[in-house]
Image (cartoon, rainbow, N blue to C red; front, side):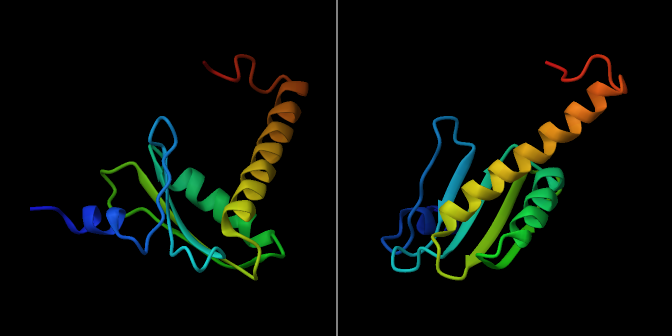
Length: 121
């Protein structure tokens, strides 16, 4: 018997896109591109809260929230509603902004010699 999530993922009313590594799923009705739920696998509150904060700073964001459905599963759901711009574009801008913030912090730490072996690989 298929699960409820299988029904949702295969529904004609729901668009779903996967990266090659299955790290991101995008859910939302085709007729409302300004409303999407992004499901990030292998992530936790660290990304969820930081991304929510950055997205809320974007003037195109009407609402943004995130949840971690269960503490033992590394999954973060980010719900994004925009003022009209496609949610995927606002998310892309938000991820780029977050990356710039992280790069800036890393540069400042490296300049002060605060973390000698960063980034860890």
